Image 1 (cartoon, rainbow, N blue to C red):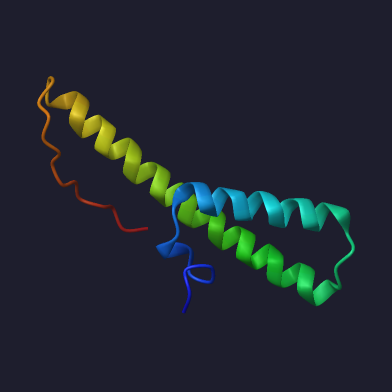
Image 2 (cartoon, rainbow, N blue to C red):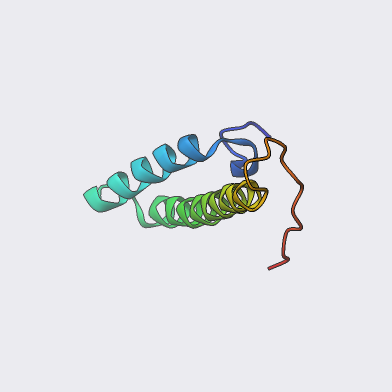
Length: 81
């Protein structure tokens, strides 16, 4: 599976760009219903993955702030959804 098809492997910014592109295409309304549904499903997946990546980044920032200026990163425990 390529990076383009697997949102887990693409970066946050790339996922957001693809999501914006999908939204724009869906808003135009020129796609067949089946294609629109596939694109919508992809958009939902990208949105969930992006949200997860953002939450992970926020947790890392919190860990850094709690270390009172220490420059080391600590692993954090991910909560299961």
